[in-house]
Amino acid sequence: MTGLGKMLMTIGGIIFLVGFLMQFIKIGRLPGDIIIQKGNTTFYFPIMTSILLSIVLSLIFFIINRFR
Image (cartoon, rainbow, N blue to C red; front, side):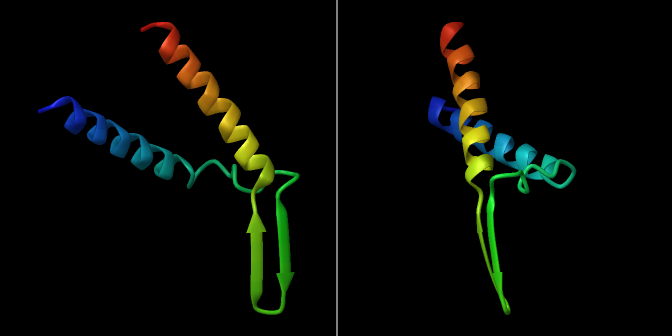
């Protein structure tokens, strides 16, 4: 398998694992997330979840890049 194929398989596996873990970890409802409910419509904007995810991914990529 080529480098691109391995990378796509790895990314797919990570997305699958994160999706599976999201069923058990309720990270999507942090304080600071905006939720507006009016009638039958719900608007959800995960500001704090996005910031936390950005920090975690930045640290992971920093550590990976450090050991290259």
